[in-house]
Image (cartoon, rainbow, N blue to C red; front, side):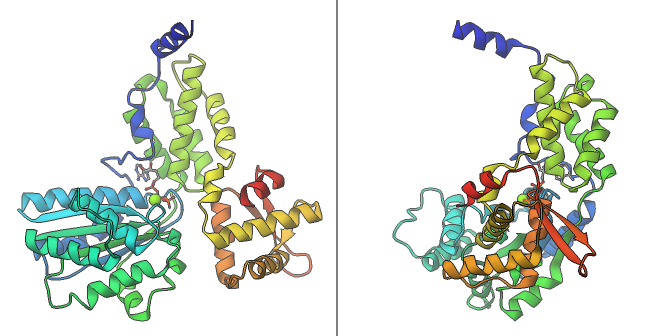
Length: 387
Ligand SMILES: Nc1ncnc2c1ncn2[C@@H]1O[C@H](COP(=O)(O)OP(=O)(O)OP(=O)(O)O)[C@@H](O)[C@H]1O
Ligand SMILES: [Mg+2]
């Protein structure tokens, strides 16, 4: 019985042609509307190909959630690797996600595992691993382009600083074998860097604006053509998805809507995606997944917890930023933490708003006040996740 149910389900027709191309890890060959950023990166890192070893280049990619930072860095890195190979230059691209590897040591470990598989990484310090990497590169006459992605998540703020200062000081008179791409959502994440490092970095900022509705339309269309059968997608549905996602400017959200809507179409045995499938998908995606909340940096979580506590205590739909800050400070005190500054807290509110966790509204009662409320998630559920 069970076997038959499964076998039958697996034989059902599907509107997907290549579902894998809609999954988060897939890096599209073409990144439409990111031509400017690709050109900027090419100019910055050109020297690695023209005169390898002359300089250690660094670039920062900045932009909101789902604007293509990771995809652009990866596609650029892989392509540079290919072009270097044609020119007989030994260049390797390594993409490190700082959410997974949160310390300098873990970053070094990740790099070593990639370039020297099988190297016993136990019993070495981060510095020793760094030297080993460097010697390996010297011996092989190789170069690395490393991306430190999601740097906002580094618990150890010093990791990149350490990295960068080692690069510029100790190895000054040797061939420059390491270049870096740093990815952050906000410029404040680089606050901890010392002035000199920061000012050299600030020369090479590549900004990613949020996508507008037309751009999202083009993206969803292109990715849809790759993933779905031709008759499965209509203009109407593509427009609808682009418009829904345009409020956030987030391509990930748009693609997730497309994928989920496709799943609904399959489940209902429809040979194309209908607006109703998109609406169902939208209702699903809006539920903020627990892991998104758990992945937030500590102080952002504390801020969110303060909001949840206050909303519950007051039993109202909104709280003011002033109230939130007070509660947040008390929480920090309880935990023996230094509270973040006002401007930083504002950034957190913006970020939580972009993630779809919060909504804000400005009123003119008693001067301009910002009211903060929660979107589509119960205070109790949120509090239990955060606690
Ligand atoms: N211009 C584009 N063309 C095609 N697909 C895109 C484009 N921009 C983004 N995407 C896709 O949208 C999704 C989100 O992009 P990406 O992961 O690069 O965002 P991000 O800026 O790194 O976001 P986050 O800050 O959340 O990490 C990915 O699946 C990516 O492949
Ligand atoms: Mg990313």
